[in-house]
Every structure is written in C-alpha cells, then in structure tokens.
Length: 127
Image (cartoon, rainbow, N blue to C red; front, side):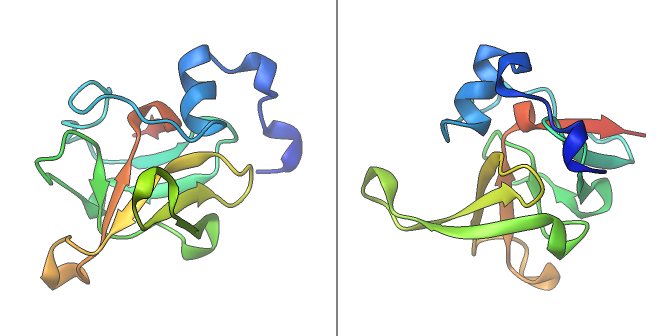
C-alpha cells in the first residue's frame, strides 16, 4: 500500500470523517463488524493498510469489534489520549493517521491482556 491510495477527506462519508479525522466514535452495537465471525483480514477503510486478523478478534461484550493484537505492530500507532477527562491509549493507522479506536488492558489474559476496541466504520474486511 502506498500513500497514493489514501482517500482524500473529500471522499470520506460524513460519519467516517467524524470518526477517522475528528476522533469520534460510533455508537456501541451499531457497527457492521462488532458481531462478525468471518475469517479474514480487517483493513483500514481510509488507506487499505492491513490492521487486524480475525484470528485475534473476540467478543468483549462492549459493542465494538475487539482484538487482542494488531496483525502487524508496525501498521498501528499508539498515542496517549487525555481527552474527555480520561487517560486512554489511542490507536491510529500508522500509514494514513486515521483514528481507529483505543486499546485497553482488560482483554483476555491468556492472549496478553490487551483489548483493541476499534470502530467498525474505520474497517474494511477481506475474506
């Protein structure tokens, strides 16, 4: 994937722009992938970068797709997020800078204890 494949902001839907560029979030249990169980790869909607394998997806009960690990650690960027009076770790696509969601320390202990809580709208899926 190269920088030329990144969709310009003018090509993003208002909902995707709100989440990916303005660091918003979709409502829980509303996204297309929160309850998906198909096997494949989740990619960034904005640029196509591979982000998460379905092999690491689990049901967190939160209403957002949750993963124990990224498919490639060098495809995501983690940043401190102190917005809204909270201290969290933001997850971004390293290639295009899209806000994807947050990572928390309450995932399955046997898989490292991380829960990457990701907005469905920021993901595409390839079987």
